[in-house]
Image (cartoon, rainbow, N blue to C red):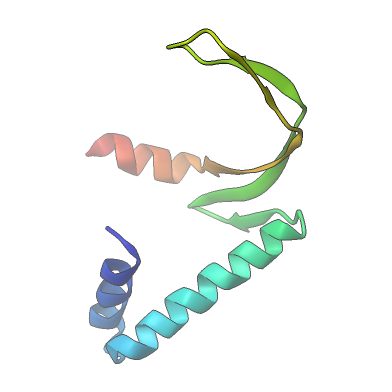
Length: 92
């Protein structure tokens, strides 16, 4: 499912126009992105948590060539699923 598919499903379930559903989807993603850029933790009970984690500088190796490459330090986005979501996914 991509963003357009998601907005279409939102439109069907809520009986709002598809253009409005796409606007809501884009606004939601903008809010999540801006909050994570501010290093805020976003928590949806029953779904999971979005947060940023600091990753220190490290040396990595290209498995094909064996060449070393320096990976700079920085923050990375992380998602941790809730127990409820994990159990629903594992039910199939």
